[in-house]
Image (cartoon, rainbow, N blue to C red; front, side, top):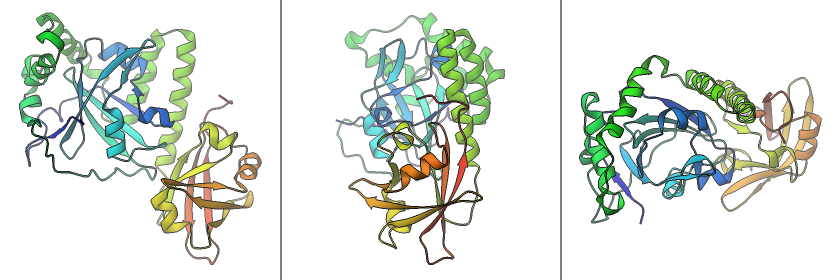
Length: 332
C-alpha cells in the first residue's frame, strides 16, 4: 500500500517557511527512480539523527511516507520513493530541491526537462487508514524538537521505542546554530554542499567536485530562454557512448518531433547540421540513426547539457541545439 496523505485543504505547511538546509538532486539514471542517495556532505551534517520513515511534501500539500535505508556508508530514500517518483513522472534529467525540516520532513520541489516546475496532480485518497497531515507536522519553529511530526515518527518504530530527549533536540540546536550558512537559492545550496565535502576523503572530494561542476552546468542550461518549444537534456553515459541513444519525453516528441515521420535535422550554430531519426517507444521516444555522428562530431561527453529547441518557421523538422559543456575531462 502506498502511504500517501494530504494536508487539510487550504492549509499550508507551518514549517515550510522556516529557514531550511537544502540540497539539489539531478536524476542521472533510472536507478535513482527506485532508490535515491542523500548527498554525503548533507547527510553527515544534518541527518545523523534522522527518523525513519521520513515524509516528503510537495507544494500542493500532498505528503508521502518513505523509508530510510542506511547502506554502503550512505543514507538512501528507499521503499516508497519509487511510488513518489512514478506518481510525479520523474525521469532522467529532472531536477529536485529538498528542504529539510525537523528530522523527518522534506519539502520537495520538482523541475522537469524544460526547467519549469511541474504540475502536481492531486488524487483523492480512499484508504481507510489515511491520516490528516495536520496531525503529523502541525507545529511552529519554537516546538520543532517536540512537535507531532517527530512523535508520529516515533510511534511508527517497532515496539514503540523512542529516542532520548537529548537526541530530539540536538539536531535542531545544530541547525539553528548553522542558520547563517543556509540560502534559499539553489546555487548557494551547491556552494555550501561543496564546502561540506571538504571533510571527506580525497576520493569522495574529487567525486563531489565533479558532481558540483555537473550541477552548476545544468543550472546554466536551465537559464536558457526561448519563445520556441525546447527541452533540456543532460548527457548520460548511454547518450554519448554505446548505445548512443538520446531519450526524449514522449509527450514532447509526439507534439513537436513527428510531423515529418520523425526525421529531424539537428543544427548547431556555427558548426553544421546533422540528420537524425526520432522513434516513438511505449513510455518515451529515442533519437538514433545519426545521433552517434552528432555526438562524435560535437565531442559530447558525460555531464554536457544540450538544449533542443524546435524551430517553427521552416518546412523542415529543424531542431537547433545549444551545447553547455560540462566537466572538464571525461568521467566515463
